[in-house]
Length: 268
Image 1 (tube, one colour):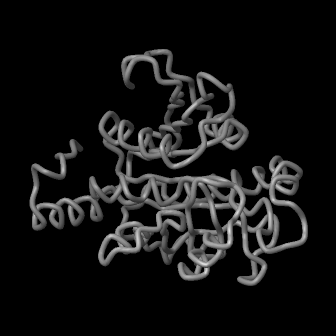
Image 2 (cartoon, rainbow, N blue to C red):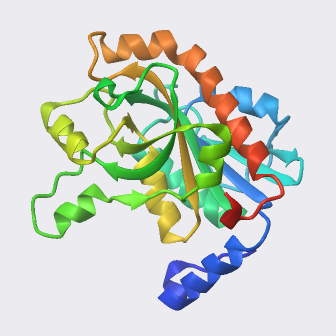
């Protein structure tokens, strides 16, 4: 189904579009995932093929598309690729925003899944290896202390409400806070507490912002690699646990996609 640009449709048309989509079976899923380590197991699980046609995205970008059919679903997995200068995964909100925008334009998904690893907060009950289905997203590092601009900076949004997925798969539910740094400054900590977040990442709220622009429903699946308010250094714990936690993440994503098959949005 072709998506109109936001500036081309009014509020009532957006509501009609959402209603139309919610009653039709989901057929086209877009997975946005930031790191190759997180992406490859899902590529193998769903037997996706790497797209060799470079015309889908703007010339010169390192983004990688994997695609294929799983059950009755067209699955597109987009990984932002390796930074052209430094050769590391293109993590963070800038790459996530650009990839999400271009992918929505090119692929017209019925549903976006942003999957990835995240830091968790012990004070909120998070443990390494836990997988969360996110209820709400917000930014914690866009501090604009001017009325209304402050709320814009936080950018709070709700993820797609999926009570049946939560019940069926017994996933934990928590709020997500997004920022462009792996560490946490005292200012970030105060903002994350204000966001009531259980997990923090570097992409989710950016994906949510773009998805919201185009009225594309989005869900967020985040697996905890490190305890932000624990004793161990975040970077050290993240690297140590990445592979094991990615396995838990990919299992959860697979279960969610199995559940989505043959259903419409209103049944999630």
